[in-house]
Length: 216
Image (tube, rainbow, N blue to C red):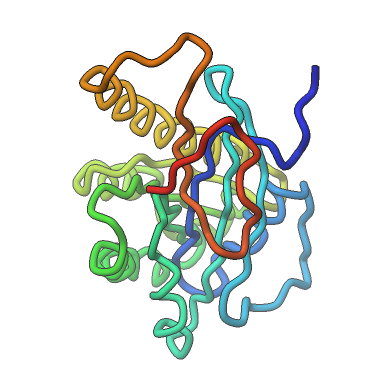
């Protein structure tokens, strides 16, 4: 039986960060609504959207925040790292400068986000192969040197967009569920019909409709 859209087992907040114009908003709209807008303008402040996927039989709801990449909005967006358990660090493969700024964004993320946040490096606009300025090898080397996962995507033709979000959400889920199992193994025995839901909750989102919820 299908479950209501507002019912989920886990809620994870994920942020999209990177320079303005790298395609963060279109990655968000492609994943959550399967839409792409060639005329999209730079995000002002912060926007977010949600989508639920199934991981290991559980419903995982992603609350994805699109942070403005312009310098003047960085003070605004830094507050939105709070509570994030995942981050997609995005650059444009056709613009070398956006890749060179990845180190700065990574530092900002580590300064403001939880130390255990799961980070994926994303080389977007892979459809622009004829304009490529950053090689796949460069992205792979940087991610390996900083213990990040890595993928190249195209929001335009949808290449690897679902794969990117699914991979990071699956990794987050398995880390959280492992911690939950370890915690429960040291706790008093629970009945067979009970379970615990780990929720990363934001005030703008409706509370989870589950048997029990716990904010972390």
